[in-house]
Image 1: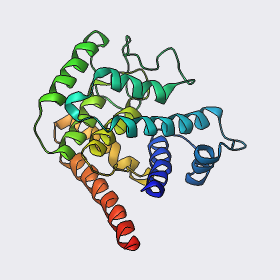
Image 2 (image 1 turned 90 degrees about the vertical axis):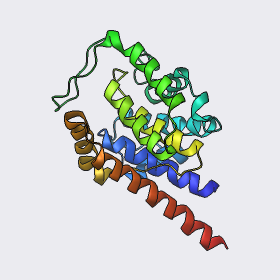
Image 3 (image 1 turned 120 degrees about the horizontal axis):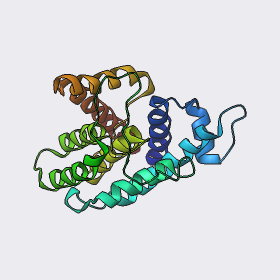
Length: 223
């Protein structure tokens, strides 16, 4: 289990950051996260993103003892604080107070004045929904991205939070691979434009299924 966690830690850190444009390769990410090695020629920010995401994953692992009814807005802010620490300390762990746009998208994001109320509504929804945990995890991901509560780091925080819900209910984390970036972003855009979550559900459910296969394969090899 410990070896699997280390493997997932590198995979999740690499893939989630790669989706956001981080230039570290998977092997370079492993060296940064596991060995603390600096990769020559790569930006300092890319190193910090890898280190921060790995720390955030450890924090999520600790939080996973909670059930969704016990998760608070402070937990989400703490996850985001780890994602942006030393990169943007002024905004790390703080809800945005300015208007923002998603680069290359026509999606209109909520007014910053509405963000606190929307986040409180999100927590109320999280505590009250009785749907399947995997669906709750995927819906939570999209709802957070739709609110876009932070100046930066929204996607990484949403993926971490999705995996918090999955892990809390005994599921493995979902890895959205770097080569699935276009399909992932397109599925999110489709939800924004049409309200149709089918492609997004399919992509994430498939990712959870693949992670389950990895655990089952490892278990069978140890028997």
